Image (cartoon, rainbow, N blue to C red; front, top):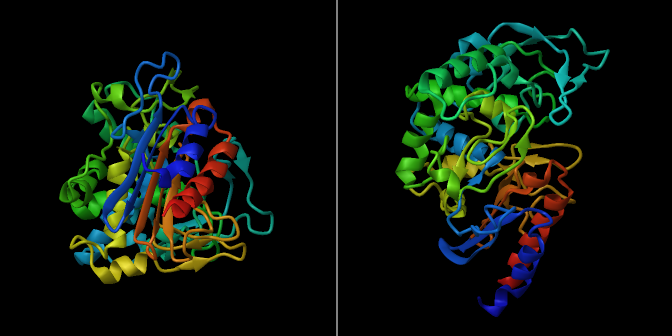
Length: 388
């Protein structure tokens, strides 16, 4: 390994096993891979199977970027508009609902509505696709959708059970109370991206999101990213947390309970992929759509669509560098865009340097304390820039 990458290598090696038992980091510039390495073990207890550069990781919320790309392809195709109401595609979402209780995503405890807002009416038809993509829909951050979908899923999951779980999930998603008026404020919402996934499936006429993403994104790009890994693939997948609901260590099963409840196929989480796959999605947006998306729509997606008073900036589906403590690094240019995943994954792109960095880890193997990965990401990105 070139001496130019000494600091990055040091940061990555120090992260194993304290932050995560395994990780892969891939750096591309101007479309060429200039660094890639893997550290740690796929079997942390026995340490007989090292992580490889092409090992698969549970992407968690980085899945949202693939759902976004599929939706934008449908926009380019004239099937839907960014400012079209969600109810034009999912009419069952319509009606008047109230501002009411939500749930804490981690503790899964009730979050009561502010007393002055409780019972305030919201017309669901006001929610547009732009609201979903910028997390300004007024929908809650999280609800226990999986509890409406049946018992913990079996392995392997039969197709008919997956379809049934999807039906139950959509029925639940179209009934939850709002927490704010559409367009009023920012709240990062898994619920919104789950609904976007259902809209993509219906608009594409594929019937289900896994088939839609395959037709719209992964097959045209020649990617290996996919939902629902096979039993044979699990030997090459980084394990995550021991799940109390499923009563087993998760290997090749999506970590997110809601995605699992839907049968492993959801707009907000569920994809498994390599670092090369993740960088390829970044290149799609760095390079103006590469013939798959129109340059104008790509530019719109990475342009600031919303900025909160506390500095959070969002594009369409993308996080933008948000100061003072971005999840990339202040060494990246202000035009940088990316996304993180709860399992310890991330993709960040810096157009000023034609730079794309995928960092895939399974930090939730140790539990849900995020301090380690929160500190690691900016260190990695700063070391990448220093190495250039």
